[in-house]
Amino acid sequence: MADRAVGLGFDVHAFAPGRPLWLGGLRFEGERGLAGHSDGDVVCHAIADALLGAVALGDVGSHFPDTDPATEGMSGAELLGRTLHLLAEDGRSPVSVDVTIVCDRPSIATRRLEMRERLARIAGLPVERVSVKATRPEGLGLTGDGVGCLALTVVT
Image: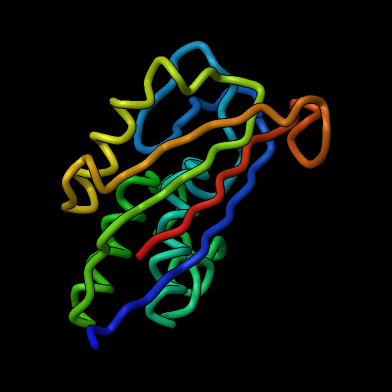
């Protein structure tokens, strides 16, 4: 039987004034950005965490700590690329990526395909192996009050 691995990733950041919004390696003009040591891209961070978890290599915080000046301002796309390099050194690569973004703003639907294509390029996958979904929190829970954005990811 082939070696199979599944990883679950989660990331959440609060909105912060004066920062650009990055999600899935894309900049969303005119939207409030997310707070963080890096660019706050919850999509790329959640994917990286899921990948690391799938192969038991720790988590994003252990590889890219927010106390390291070298990671300050790092883009989510770069963080994800470096994570993929760690997997490659271990002889692994992703097979599929499934992301759910939870936020009231911005609307993801108009840029869904663009985000899938960007993430597929970063991960070295066909776009058919990358799924991006979004939902609104309907006024409930962690992001329902409009103070942040979160992403959940499953990878194989």
